Amino acid sequence: MADMPDAAEPESGARPAARVEGRDAILEAAAAAFTERGYTATTIDDIADRLGATKGRVYHYYRSKADIFLDIHRYAMQRMLDVVSPIARSPLPPAARIAEMVRAHALLLMASFPFQRVSVQGLERHLAGRVTERQRNALDGVIRMRDAYEALFIGVLEEGVATGAFRPLVARRAVKPILGSLNWLTVWYRPRPQEDAGAQAAIAEEMVEFVVRGLRP
Amino acid sequence: MADMPDAAEPESGARPAARVEGRDAILEAAAAAFTERGYTATTIDDIADRLGATKGRVYHYYRSKADIFLDIHRYAMQRMLDVVSPIARSPLPPAARIAEMVRAHALLLMASFPFQRVSVQGLERHLAGRVTERQRNALDGVIRMRDAYEALFIGVLEEGVATGAFRPLVARRAVKPILGSLNWLTVWYRPRPQEDAGAQAAIAEEMVEFVVRGLRP
DNA sequence: CGGGCATGATACTACCCGGTAGGTGCAAGA
DNA sequence: TCTTGCACCTACCGGGTAGTATCATGCCCG
Image (cartoon, rainbow over all chains, first blue to last red; front, top):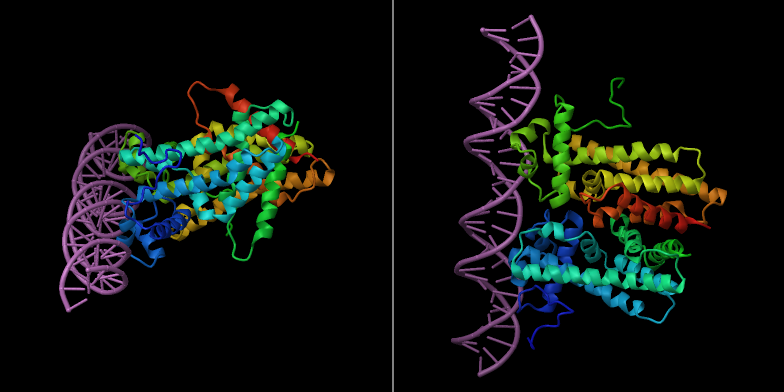
């Protein structure tokens, strides 16, 4: 088992020989298509059309539609973890740390909207049953990443309750409405061409305000 | 135009001669199937199987899968409006009124879970483009109901800001994380056989607590 | 008791879509 | 100039699924 890939960062489901840039182009087009039509209603031809290509190109990089879907989830969760876990481990007091985490989460949701929207809308339902063993492993990996992400928030909540920074609450329960108010962004928010840092920052601050107040003693 | 159906309560998309009980059975089975697999991945045979019947029965009551989908949304929104709008119009002070509305919303989400889950997960995406004119009208009706529902919350928020019961906020923005924390229930909550009023009430209280504190001055 | 109608089953059709097989063009080395 | 291999395309197949056309079975009412 010495030459196993790093278990903490599951590997891509793309075909082994695939170039990274080619693979990323597929993922970006697929994320946009899934965002617009949903997983099942999106056809491989939809994805190819967005690239000005044909199915051949898509299948040159990925074995199946499910593999593309899983890779999008993996990318999205990895980016979220990369941004937020340093904050969760920082020496800030719990209230300030949660505020930073919420801000970063909201901003990243808007910044890489198609990927994050696909990620937030869930995956188990779409792949129920009809997966190969390799895909099942990838699915489990994504679910573990999601649990680890939620655990970052639960950890800070528990610390804040212990120090008295937050009201008494059950961290495992309280984390749901927090992530809910954040992730609901993917339902109502639509990236607009002109709108930039300003408007996105205002939305993020609204989230921070709401969450931080909801936790105060 | 004197004999138009009540515009505020759009009529069912079922076949005109359909019995109400027969139609409701279809809707219930369809809501369960859509909840499990999603709209596109659910087949008419899936719905029929849940009834111990065949496609013939389903098509006896509904013209198309999209009509069933739209009717589920209509039902779900109508029930939510029926429960929450009396509260929104009650003479309670804003803070107490919002608390009651949040509680009622959360409890109804859990009580009629399959319908509400289908409703919350949205509909525009699944029907984009491929609808008849009649379906387009039904779709617009559902969207109007959804906007009216959100307006109930916005109204109470504005009143609370005016009376000083809530912190200064832009109601149109602040309503998003509120409904987000609530509707996120449909993502993580799973109804369990034994769990009853007690556990559901506890979850609802968590929501109430979080929202009310998030609004305080 | 017989006709009509609501209710539903059976047996199709036409089409769409994921996936595959094999080919083509082109760039880089020798 | 020949060769090799990558990147991608064309053409196709097979299974699945929405929707339809038609037939069977009761149940109510005269």
